[in-house]
Length: 150
Ligand SMILES: [Cu+2]
Image (cartoon, rainbow, N blue to C red; front, side):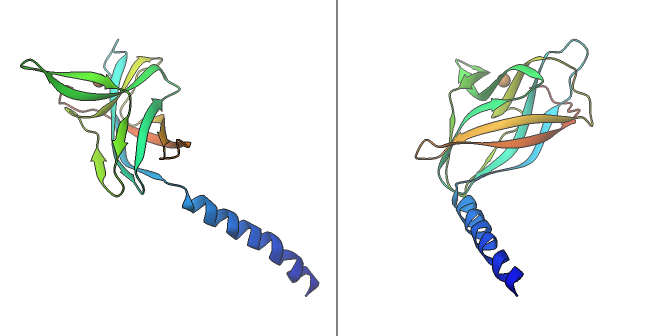
């Protein structure tokens, strides 16, 4: 019986810890994939769906296999659709935002190795809540060949 009582306190502390953890605003990432590269290609794109459980802002993306990683959007420049880097992306609570070919994407540049279909590409997404608290979510994007050009 004594042992039980001793156990109770750490358990409560653990539960309290879990409760406060889940109170943090979270960013859910699903369906992550990245485009396989062809010979000599040093850049690629990664795509996924994001869903925030509170208003958040995606502020940074990183990968250990890319020298530079940017968040890109597609925008019209005159009559031409071009991609360009954005500083961050506001995410509304509960709304799913899709990164996909021809639209928002994570741009990976200066790849240190080829991305082959079936590989897992690690990506870290950094986001900020309203209080400017930064958090990270680790993503394993599945590398796939994709016929459509960016
Ligand atoms: Cu791009």
